[in-house]
Length: 88
Image 1: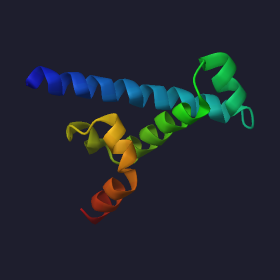
Image 2: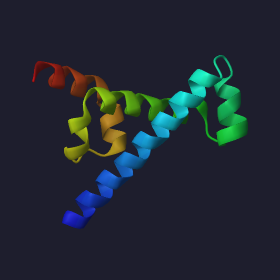
Image 3: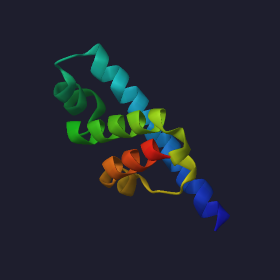
Image 4: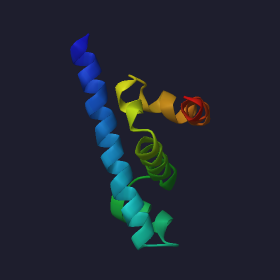
């Protein structure tokens, strides 16, 4: 069970790093984000944007990383999570 939690946290940290990298690319190549995704990173720009949103969420609320919430759920419930954390 503890190994699963550790694996989840490592996965979330890798997504955080991807978001950090993609946000830097997006800022360096303003207006070219979709082309950069398609040609340089070989990902869909929507996927890149999800990693960027995840990065922004974790920068604002780093304790999410210890809550054992998987990436997909945290992105699906992002607004609810932010609302709850603002009230905490």
